[in-house]
Image (cartoon, rainbow, N blue to C red; front, side):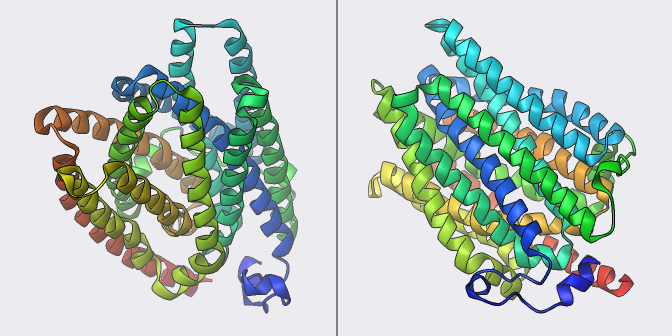
Length: 441
């Protein structure tokens, strides 16, 4: 049914200048758009609060916080897999989102209770929870998209659907920037919970709409089933999923170094100005997402279709090669590290969310339904955060041994080159799977 829809003509009118929609896809697209908008708006209200709390504790906490996040992922991932095995897709979505909303309400009341050192420890717990929450809800979102849209639809629509997320990040960043002093941090948590509930409503509507277009009943769908450890086993034994895992691992190294530098800047440049620190973090997010929006609206879909998955997957590693080279040179005294860092971080995030992430998610449209939820979730959470843990401790040791940001940047350059090569390999593998899938249709 999906392939038939893909063959129908494009929707006319002004919307077709930006979107490559076919007839019958409009409602599903808008629900997916809203689903991502509300989910990321919720998260981007929490993110500046998390960064502010982390900076208050100092950059020395980061390796321990990331290690705690990885432990949280390892504890949560089997519970998620068990829910996927036993519950229909609709039911485990409801469970995951309502659990997250409940946690936000608990943090709201804890914030009213603790003060002083108690809030520092609450901030550490909040960092771990938000980091786990972020990875799971975004992984679940893309799992649903890979399930309800096929490979051809994904190439056309994932970039445009990602615009919903970008608008959500802009809305979340702006709300935090404008309302933090008016409402206070605690009340922002309740606003985040409300937006998350709206995201869940869109998700359930999307599943029902796509099920209806296939003549299915989404409320009576069977559980995905399989084994609880299937995500781990498939990620190891499937060459395709193993290559994706390696790509994700290499992807974590650069952002980890940049995050450490971001917290260091926040805790030194804005040492005595918590409000200024929160404003800085939220404004960087806001301007980044505005540029990402332009990328997704006018370039993402066209670039994925014209360049192919392999070259678009290489875009971020190539930018990272250039960016770390310039940042390293700046640390040697050739330019302002602060402004080079801001420019690199903004550009990297624009390319990651505007091009690399939608391309990466297309890879999962060609795997089995069980892999879309279990293996993908394992890769997006445990593998991703495992890479974070390895990177943060190795980079911490490197900083102690090398003593400067410059040499750490130069140390990453070979890793970025290998990462780019892996992107090309994945592109070729995806092309072969796509051709095989088309021949069986």
